[in-house]
Amino acid sequence: MTISINAAFDSGNIVVDSIDGTRARLSIRKDRESDFFQWFHFRVACAVGDELELAIAGLGDSAYPDGWPGYAACASYDRENWFRLDTGYDAGTLTINHSAEGQLLWIAYFAPYSMERHHDLVASVAECDGVSYRCLGTSLEGQPIDCLEMGTGPVQVWLYARQHPGESMAEWWMEGALEKLTDPADPHARSLRQKCRFHIVPNMNPDGSRRGHLRTNYAGVNLNREWDNPTADRSPEVLAVRNAMDESGVDWAMDVHGDEAIPAVFLAGFEGIPSLKDEQQARYLAFQSALAANTPDFQTALGYESSAPGKANLSMSTTQLAERFGAVSMTIEMPFKDNRDLPDPVAGWSPERSKLLAHACLATLDQML
Image (cartoon, rainbow, N blue to C red; front, side):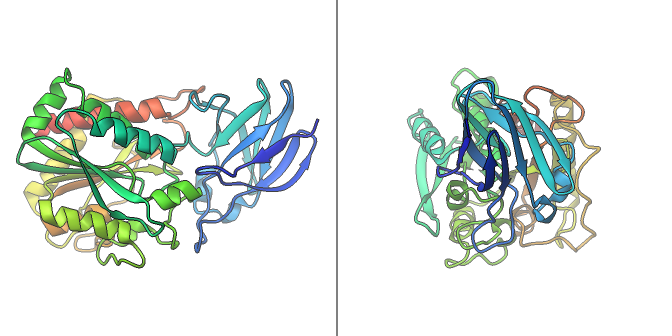
């Protein structure tokens, strides 16, 4: 029997170059109007017992080639439970080997978070007591930029995710955050809703998400390089969110991401902004230390290099919000690979751990306030 491969669905991305029995040679489609590519998501139809060999070639030119060594592809038979596959990388080719246990196997760069699941999440949370819904604007393809708001306190907190659509762990994090904040029995949630007004944007890039992009929107624009000058024709998603932030103000903000190469959870801050205040930086560092104490899934040894004084890139959201509002803003990064300090050989970094990390972040914010 010859296998068949298809990616014509929400967030699907693969190019089938050739199939020979149970072996296939594949490549990844670039983001529209962009040279970025790394995200893949496809379905294999096969027979139980098939020895699959799937080779994804051309990855030396991908967005982050350092993301492939030590990486294992994600897979699921039911699209609910995801596990890691036997995966090797050599000379620009990622080779996935698996003995099929079912007739349909979904394979992805990380467990996908579909736009249908996004709409289910927004619909369910909007029904919760004390939650209000706002559409902040629309994407270039007309999809809504959904915002869920809750809490009665004076501290303005913004949580937003998936500026880079291929970083699907970011919306799993959002699902965990929303579950915690709307749990009437959760003491941290009750405390936070008294102290804060939350503005939560689970997906800032619905077009890229649906199209199976790694990093950009419909126009091929990296939204996290638009925050100093967003425009309606290039980045209406950022323009809509930043305009709403200007209306509310921002005291605390977290931009949720995934990192291709670093096998750890870490924060990136705003050290290099021109107006940096000692108290602002101290609160960020205190949050970082408290989060490390609250969950062993977070660490401070691995991460990005800090910007030099006055040299921050203000086109990025975390630095723009720190400069614009004096906010304590941060980018949280989760791995596509496994967590180096607490590896899980079956699931690697997973949707479940992404959700639990959100719980820890919110508990830490409650402590900080």
